[in-house]
Amino acid sequence: MKLWNKGFEPDKMIEEFTVGNDRDLDLLLARYDVEGSLAHIAMLESIGLLTKEELTALTGELKEILAIIDRGEFIIEPGVEDVHSQVELILTQRLGDVGKKIHSGRSRNDQVLVDLKLFMRKEMQRVAKAVAGLFDKLQQLSERHKDVLMPGYTHLQVAMPSSFGLWFGAYAETLVDDMRFVSAAYDVANQNPLGSAAGYGSSFPLDRKMTTQLLGFADLHYNVVAAQMSRGKTERAVAMAISAVASTLGRFAMDVCMFMCQNFGFISFPDELTTGSSIMPHKKNPDVFEIMRGKCNRLQSLPNEIALLTANLPLGYNRDLQLMKDIIFPASTELTSCLEICVMMLDHIIVKDGIVDDPRYDYMFTVEDVNRLTLDGMPFRDAYRTIGMQVQRGEYRPTRSVSHTHVGSIGNLCNDQIREKMREVAAHLGVQV
Image 1 (tube, helix red, strand yellow):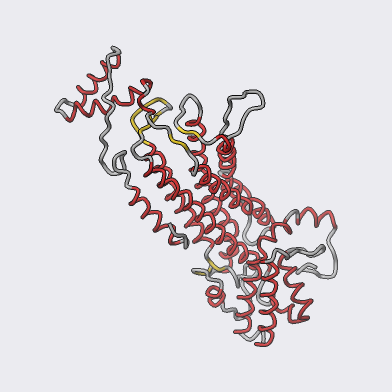
Image 2 (cartoon, rainbow, N blue to C red):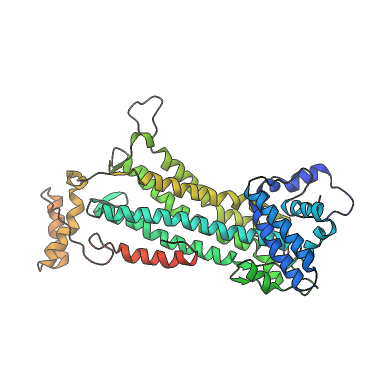
């Protein structure tokens, strides 16, 4: 069954090429397709295109389809083109001609758009919840290990004192900025395209504000052409959000892999959370974080994929847009799984104390001693030269004491203020922190 059926079937090879795995991906949209139809038929009844009895019958059957979806029993039958056709087929089989009326004033273009908007809006909330979970864990670890010093690096050379509180806390605050991307993508998705039909509106007196309210959208795409143009734009916003979070998580995974190796030895994990070697019996490999790093690097390609797919499309709907499902649909699940496994691993992280007592880290205290001399009255350039010459002559002996008190420094992490920033952003997405 095809919504566009005109009495002929396309060549089978053509159909297989153009449909691809779209039917499988459509199963993820089933709930949203039914929700969109429920709002649409309520609106159709309000403008006189359905009777109250027809609305009652259609609503009852659509809610039964929702129950089938919730039980995991919904399928797209062989020969049925997509989820939209399957829902309409079920209604027609059960209600006859009444089932055929649900498409009045609607095109599959705006029907797909509604499904995608609802899906991506929900996925951004799911990503936001997972980001908030990692944020909480990083803040807990920042407070727990705030007094444990570690070397800070520039150019991968030992530079200045840092701390585990600073390291964990830095990634927590960076996630706040990433959450802003998620929030922005949510806002782009949170606009109603229903009623734009094929992209040029309808001669029916559709009440688009009513469906906006019924579907819980914050606003609607007013211009019907702009509504259709939002396909691709919304996916790009979601891709940017996923990429932003993946960038932070991938960088953190790299730090973990580096700090676990014997040359650093700053952190470790229980044996059962690492893997071994088939030839080297001593190995404890950070495979979880290596896979995480690889997945996050791959997720960062999403905006480019979407950009290239949509770069030279003309105005109006084009079938190329179907391919974005294949890009976006698995991505949010991939990212949330990485975020969740990261939290699980951090539940068991072992932080090594006394790292900076090792003589190899003596020079990370040079700036502290330059500042100390400056505070005692010596001009900064003279203090810098004094400590520099001690280093050159091999006479430098660090004091190994650190006193950083300004906002955001080792001794003043401001985790409460950072949490408040995250709370404000997350609240917009309905996520508690």
